[in-house]
Amino acid sequence: MSNTDTNLDFRSFGSRMKIVAIFVIIPIPFVGIIFTLLALSDIRNVNLKLNNPLLGDYRSKFITAIIFKLIGSIVGVVAWFFPINYVGFMYTYDFTYLMPLFVFTGTGFIITMIAAAIEMGAWGALETFFRQNTTMFPAYIARDAEEGSHYLKNGALMYVLAFLFITILIGWIFQIIGYFKVAKLEQIMNAPMTEPTYQPTPTPSPTSSSTNVKYCPNCGADVSGAGKFCGTCGSPLS
Image (cartoon, rainbow, N blue to C red; front, side, top):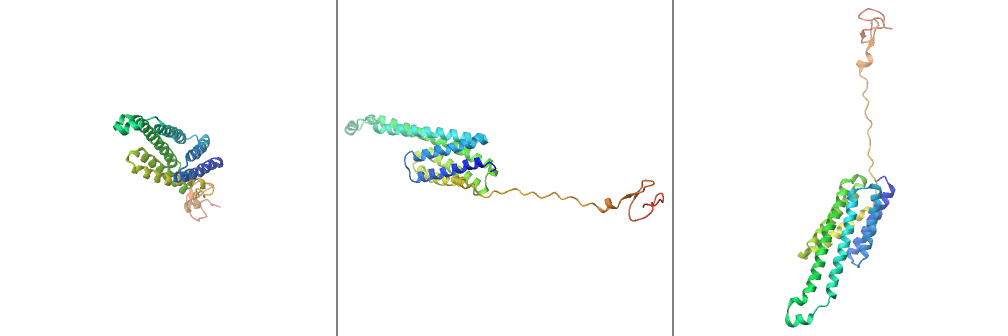
């Protein structure tokens, strides 16, 4: 890219994506979210210069997804602290005693799935940005960033289908691959850019007919060849 400041922002975004990938492997509460928010601030800085609607869409949707995830997590945690008559359930097996647990847990799960669906849209927007702007980056970085966004989009889809359970593991693997691929952006300052080469337009060589054509100074007739007299009026040519 030609703009050094934008390069630095994308490089910072890639570095933070690598850290997020590490905390996807080793989940520590809220640390990954903090670095994700920092990465989104890098995208905001980039978009202040590029003013690209796809980057704006990515950032706004991802922030919305984070908010929904937090709400879903809070609702799910509240379910386990809600006063429930477990003793009554043990004696009667009446599931109405557990109804608050089901309601809060189910609501939190649905909100989390909605967050994953919104996140799918965010990564889809970023994937489209890299696809449409490949010339802004070295070829292998643009390719990995696009592929990484695609993996992350599919990873979010797996979390939308979390009720199948096995998709949670698949989504986790897709996230790791995707984040590390997008993290290749941190190499942007060191990657060689391919500059277009321009071939000079060949100038046609003058033909023999154009160089050998002469005009009679007396009558103006065209005279070709090496003759010394005009073939029309007989006047000397020199």
